[in-house]
Image 1 (cartoon, rainbow, N blue to C red):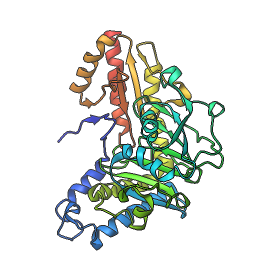
Image 2 (cartoon, one colour; image 1 turned 90 degrees about the horizontal axis):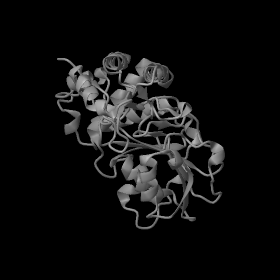
Image 3 (cartoon, helix red, strand yellow; image 1 turned 180 degrees about the vertical axis):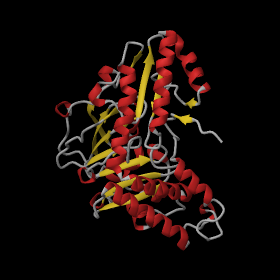
Amino acid sequence: MSRVWNFSAGPAVLPAEVLARASDEMLDWQGSGMCVMEMSHRGKEFIGIAAEAEKDLRELLAIPAHYKVLFLQGGATFQFAQVPMNLLGATGKADYAITGEWSKKAAKEAKAYGDIHIAASAEDRAHTYAPAQGAWRLRADASYVHYCSNETIGGVEFNWTPDTGTVPLVADASSHILSRPIEVSKYGLIYAGAQKNIGPAGLTIVVVREDLIGHARAGTPSVMDYKLQSDADSMLNTPPTYSIYVAGLVFKWLKALGGLAEIERRNVAKAKLLYDAIDAGGFYRNPVDKPDRSRMNVPFTLADARLDDAFLKGAQERGMLQLKGHRSVGGMRASIYNAMPVEGVQALVAYMKEFEQRHG
């Protein structure tokens, strides 16, 4: 069986080793006689799986003991409402930085729950950069500051952590979590949908400082209350059991590679390979300021947009799929998450050079 090079922004490529192990354990997980999908989330087998997944995630991210780890449902988009419901506090104020479609949607959703101030924005240049710290206009009485640390659509990544003083920093890290080490203690809350670097769609990871939970606004549904979910070990309702299981396998895969320092080294090399090909001449172009380019999501355009269909057709014939850019941006987008081998990027670069020679 041949595998394609899957450049999808999500659901995205998973490590072959993880898929192989999940396949081996599909009918009988470690002598239980059951698939993980069939297990009761209250049974000792799955409780053990979930506990080990949390343990491994804590090790990978070096999560301090006074932070809670939640395995929730609803995707990162669900957090656009859940964050303000839980964190807006007595002031009802929050500051948002806008660097692309996802941070814009998060701010729009939050406006239903309080006083939302746009503290920084890259809209003046079509979301092609991360606003410098000096451009942020933060309010001292905000309950939190929210930003998207990697914009999947536009390919803007923060390669630094915003300084928000004593106001808790909240990050939507969906499309680059686990791609590099981060200092969790600089954040009040980090959330991420699983379907990029963690596992199958259906799971959302929330890492939240303990003192920030327990203050949900009146009327918050029970399943959206971080404190209630924390007290129930993320099992207030039936959790996405199989997604948690696969996420646990991904965590073990990362640990076996050497952890986040090693995967970052690999990601830097892959991104450099692709950006060097884009920058080599005038045929391809990436619009993002170089210091703010994403290592995970690489949008690029061709010199002549009339060649887009031919480029995509040729890529598909060579086993390279999901390269079409988001409809709001156009062009191409190559998502090269943790599980994309360097060989996939090499294949794409070779094709790009071949295509340019024929059409440039």
